[in-house]
Length: 84
Image (cartoon, rainbow, N blue to C red; front, side, top):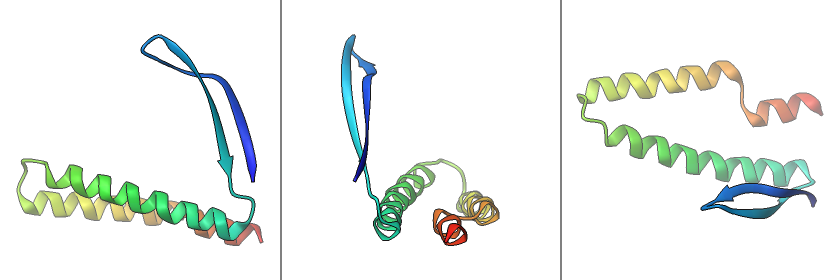
């Protein structure tokens, strides 16, 4: 695994913290990590949209717009396949 050491990576309540992040080396592991992150993001978006006070139709339009925007950009998986 590759890692990055971020010294003084943040300031939480006035306390400097050190963060070490680990990144998967293989494309397969990177894709798995991306899938897991995408699932968490999708859950967060769903929760936010469900908590909106607008009508269902507006919520559906918002979700449709998100899908269109996402599909127009390509995905992590598409970008990894192109590099092979």
